[in-house]
Every structure is written in structure tokens, then in C-alpha cells.
Amino acid sequence: MDNLKNKTIVIGISGGIAAYKICALTSRLQKQGADTHIILTKHAQHFVTPLTLQTLSKNKVIMDMFDTNFEPNVQHISLAKKADILVIAPATANVIAKIAHGIADDFLTTNTLASTAPKLVCPTMNTEMLRNPITQENIKKLQSLGYHILYGEEGHLACGDQGSGRMAEPEVIERHIKKIIYPKKDLVNKTVLITAGATREDIDGVRCITNYSSGKMGIALAKEAVSRGAEVIFIHGNIKAPMDFEAKKIGVFSTDDMYNAVMQHYKLADIIIMAAAPSDYRIKDKFNQKIKSEQITLELEKNIDIAQELGKVKGDKILVIFSAETQDATVNAKDKFIKKNADMAVANNVTLEGAGFDIDTNIASLIFKDKIVNLDKMLKTELAEIIFDNILTLRKF
Image: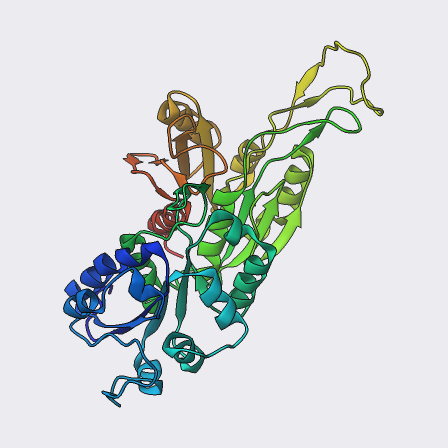
């Protein structure tokens, strides 16, 4: 079930340029039968008009805590009690800070404090404001209190910067609203082992061989598994993104370290997802001290293939492998799929725009024994959901 009939959705709009996108979101929700109520902060009124939102939502837009035309059936605490979900989008640094510290000085913050409904916050601001440790601490506090946080993909900002801080697109917010209202709990009592990030192989005391993997895909998979009720074992190398989810987390350095950790824990898992980027090679003779010579020849030797070793012993466990390629992605991934006795391979060409390392999106193909499913560019969080949906078609748990 994913329609929104008879569901009350309260959207709080704070003062950011992305406020105009809420018009499209409101329209999408209305078409699916949602009873949509809009709260507009004083600053938000500079970016979008109440009349537009009232026309789209078919409900009066609330702007003032002390409205003389007070309607007790929809306003103040009544609306907080009525909501099935409260969405704050765009959520500025100011509003996030207020909510994190319990400040209730306008209708939006008062309603947020009073509501026991699930809350979805869409941070939207300048990149440096988002990266500021104060903002990050405020967001972490909201997460610890059970708030759902949804970021948009990186890109061009209204201030001219390039980076994170954009609001998620209306269709993405809509999907997350449905996901929160109708949560999937199809992995309860199941254990998922996920590897993520880059391993490193020492050259000398200060240098190493590694790769560009950020671990973002593995983190997205871990969050999706947790949201579906799974116990997660998260074995990770070098990670560039926050690991803000509940799991047994095991940090490793080298490919050998990751292999040992995986082999120690894989028997506990029902599903194994190899999303890490372990180094294929290591230095044959590591230098104990920093290399001083201007020229040097390094001899490499091949590391163990963790996924291939798992394929030999996995039994009835589901094994999903990842294949990052620069050419012939599906062909190469299909070869790995067969060689490693996998149940699914996720292939992507990292040279394509929107499919590289350390970004929030991916363009992937899902490879199975009898078919290949080509996917469009999407957020890694969306891809994680699709991957698990497909895993669950492979075998009944």
C-alpha cells in the first residue's frame, strides 16, 4: 500500500529559496489523496505565497500563532495531534537549531515540539553552513531523537557554490514520506553483513595503496537494512561519510584484515553484500621506514579475492557483489557474477557523470542469472532500497 488517502501530512516551510519546490510536492501529495496542511514561517513568505499553497493544498495556510481567524479543528496543538507525518522542507540551519534546542517561538517550531508524529527534516542551506560543526551536531541530535533526515544530491546552489546543501527533489521527498508512513519490515530477525569503504595497503611508514571509494553506497545499504528491521554487521575500511546508524561496526585497514573479519562473521548472516572496494594488490616487501630515494620500483602481489572465497562457502546465503568498472561494465560484472558464485551483481561505470566515487548518486545495472536490469541515475539511498527489494525476490525468508 502506498497511496496517501486519509493521511494527514503537515509540511513546515522555512525561509529558503527551495521553498518554491514545495508547490510541486503539495500537488503530488494531493493527487494521492493526502490531507495536506502547510505551515509557513515568516521568512518563508518571502519565497512563496500563501495563496499558491492554499490553492494547491485546499487547506488554509497557517502563518501566525495568534491568528484571529483561529480554527480549533486544524490549528496549534490540534494539527500536531492530527498529523501522520510532519515534514520540514526546506529546513534551514536556523530552524534545525531551534528544534534541536527545544525553542518554540513560532507556529512551526511549536507544532514540531507538540507533535508525536514521525518527522522528516530536509536540510537546505549553503554548503559551509551545512558542514559547520554546530549544524552537524544539531542534525545528529535530531537523528538521536528519531527524526528522519533527508539530504538532496550535491550540485549547484543558489549562492553560486557547488556542493551539498540542496533540498531533495519533490518526488524523492514523496517517496520518503511513503516509506515512513508505510515502513517495510521484511528483514526482521534477519542478519545482513555489509562491507564498505576502501582498504589500504602500506608501502612504507607514511604511504599506502588505496582507492577512491567513500563508503557512501555501503552506508546507504546499511541504513536501508536497519530500517527494514535487520541486524547489521558492518565491516568497513576507510570511510568518508558519517556512519550514523545502529550496527555492529568493525573497522579494518587492509584487504587481509577485511577478509579475516568477513570470514569470522559471515556464518551469522542471511545476506552478504560486498559493497567495499578492497585493494586487489599489496606491496610484496613493505618498507619499514619512509622511502627517501627519488625513484623506486615496487613489486606487487595479488590479494585474496574476498567475494570469490565467500562464493565457495556461502551455502544458502545470498551473496551480492559490486563491480565498479571503467568500460564494458555489465559484461565484466557478469563474468564476476559467474566466477564468484554470486546471486546478484551491481555494476556501474564510474566514468559516467553521476556514477563516480564520493558522490550521492549512482547509475547501476543489476545482474542476475537470467536477466539484467538497467537503472537510471538515482540517489544511492534509492538504489539501496531497490537492491533489497530485488534481494527479497531471490528467496523467501
